[in-house]
Length: 100
Image 1 (tube, one colour):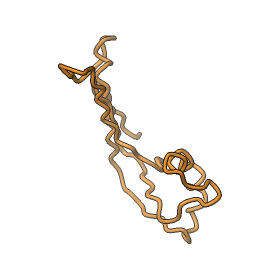
Image 2 (cartoon, one colour):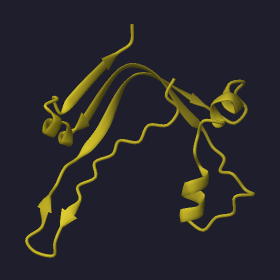
Image 3 (cartoon, helix red, strand yellow):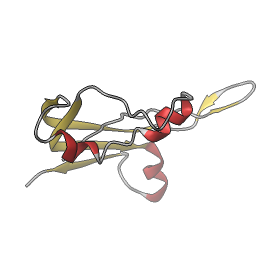
Image 4 (tube, helix red, strand yellow):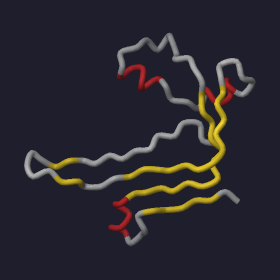
């Protein structure tokens, strides 16, 4: 199961001028999503996999008060991972994974 999905496109810019895009990477996850509220029986199980602490620290929030609200749990059926730097090593920039 995938609990948190963060699609990352991170163009690093070399500068100051001219700027250029060095690469990008990301993941697309396909599957059925479930939204779990705080009172759902499975919420506590998936909450342990959710990494909220670093976000709280970046926003100067107390670690004694975890965020509330729903979690989205996705049972991945297919994942497309894109990493343009894979070309350097002779691999396709898009890698595909499918559940059996």
